[in-house]
Image 1 (cartoon, one colour):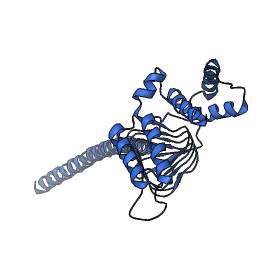
Image 2 (cartoon, one colour):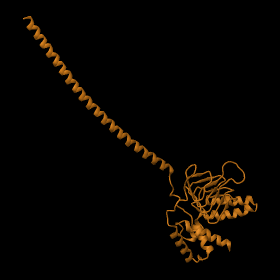
Image 3 (cartoon, helix red, strand yellow):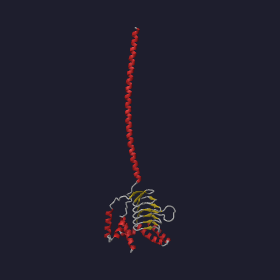
Length: 294
């Protein structure tokens, strides 16, 4: 009974997180992420019993069928959703919590040749976006979001958003931008119409826990852009200041030029007056000399 209940939950998770899902038959036949999860459960059971070669054969068959490589030793919790999973790689000692979402090209890998626990532990309700690489034996906290293309090399606290290479935290305990209550009530109503007893506290909590996943992995801050914008604003302020200083300098130069012109004109007048005075004195002297001779 538990087996079929788990299968139903796997299918329900697809409908909860992928609006493209149209029917149960389509999900069962066409969703490679779902196939990968089911095949991994088989390979993991074989691996735990010590049938390593058989487990690896099932894992390799899964990779050929789905393009998703999950080591048989990896531990995966309920509610995992793999969307467009081609290129996903999950290492041997990786641990994935409940209601995790992985997109295409994600790697949960190790660094170097260390022994023992060498792959990450992913908490509950985590979203790892397209092409992200989480490398090392550390934990990614519950409800964290890893941005597309990020390379995460150190521990991520709960409710954090990580972007960049190497990954850095840009949001922590940030506010949601959509109305979760409306979505939760609508989904509970849908489940109730489909025969689920949502008034049962256990069922209610399980469904609410499944849908408490923030899939808005595209709505991420861009710290590089913010730095560039700050630099551009600073450059603009500097350009305005230089323009003001140039205008003040031009005005000062014009004032100095006007003053120099006035000074020059005054000097010309003074010199002219002196020359006229000298000429007059010489003329008077000459006239006096001529009268004396007569």
